[in-house]
Length: 106
Image (tube, rainbow, N blue to C red; front, top):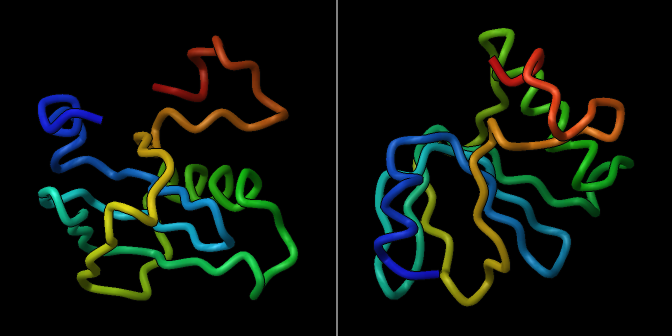
C-alpha cells in the first residue's frame, strides 16, 4: 500500500489485520516504512477468545457506534511486515448486515 493511500486513514479508527491471530484496532496516528502508530488501541489475540476476527471487528464497530471502545494500549507500534490489511473500522461489514446498507454506516 502506498504512503499516499495510507494517508487517507490518518486520524481515523482503523483495523490492522495480521496473518496470524493478532488484530489491532486503534486510531492511526502515523506510519512510515517500518510500521504503524496506533493510539487508544485494542490489541486482540484471537487465541485468547472464542470469536473469529470478523465477529470481534463487528462487535468493536458496534461498540464504537454506541460511544464506547475497548482500549488496552494508549499507544502501540505495529511492524509493517506483520500487517496484511488496513481498513477503516467504519467500513467493517458484519455478516448479519448487507454490505451496501447505509442504515448502519451513518
